[in-house]
Image (cartoon, rainbow, N blue to C red; front, top):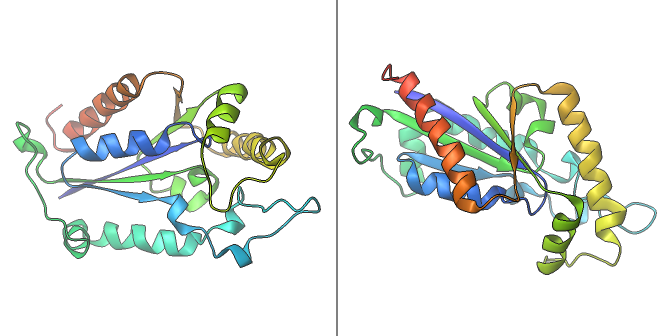
Length: 204
């Protein structure tokens, strides 16, 4: 059995979830663990002096719980899939890859949590310009909703801060242009992952 862990990180509304889902749909024996599902209860999220909830920091997330789930997959991907109502499958036309299990870790702060950088094999980061990011963010409905001024007062400044921290500590990231079409992004990443899977099985 071979295991491969893929990281799909990036800016809010940059296309992380869409890319991760597309990869999962096309890669047999894959599973997605999304960082957004590990937010702490709202009552535990800090508030700054302006009343802005500090969601864009690691302290707002239960990272130990997320790591525990990842480690459960690492120990036995087959049993992990079975415990989530899934079963191992043989890739169509790619019989040589039937023993490769792929975990997709998706989230906006995955590379700022250092333990992840030690286990993620292929790291991708989606970025988009300020104006596109703001327009996409404002077009979505959040629960709780973003308060007035939240994007400029918290979301964007924290993105810049977190990205700098990431760039100062992680060197093997592949940066992706989130303004490209979904098909272009998927095609680029899928080809690279398929090559890595073939390398793992000695079929490159």
